[in-house]
Length: 233
Image (tube, one colour):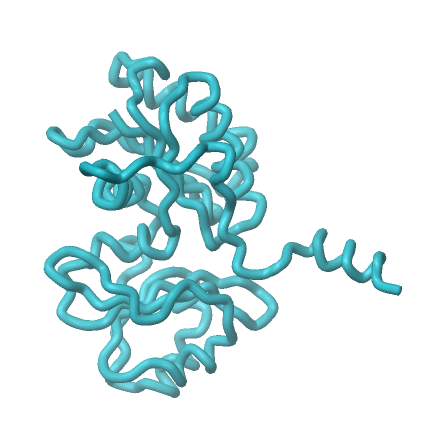
């Protein structure tokens, strides 16, 4: 049984997933309280709802970013704590890839976008290929207009970044831009689990050492920038 965790955005997601049976249970929550306050209580409720406990888990699939710096730290700290306590492996996957995975049978290029503030988005480009995602543009933090310059042909956009910059996308791409409804581009811990199974749970692939798993930030945090400014001669 895999536990999936995604706290990359303001809305957090948990899932219990079996390779043979598929989704067992799922929970989404957030907005009003910090993920650090809600993640473990909601996990307890989710496990109890199906009569399971932590020792029943075989692995933890976690979205490692990009996304909210605090949210990513909470997810990775929780996953590592559970892994060290139980001895089960961690399977880190891309937040943007997990967002996009439900649309992997699309006929056109897919562009997940998360609003990153500072006039930037976290984005990538994927080409669907028989239910898998082929990377066209790796995860990047960039100005949305720079992203538009890298896009050719029709593209399906998803994520809150595409909502925030909808007018710019329409201006640059016109009828070549398509948009997933917000309700269909929410964080999905189910997709985190499915990608983990696809990428790690197969012959010859060893899970990473839990201690080596780190968040994917794509740019320095405010704390790092302030520390650099303080330490510059």
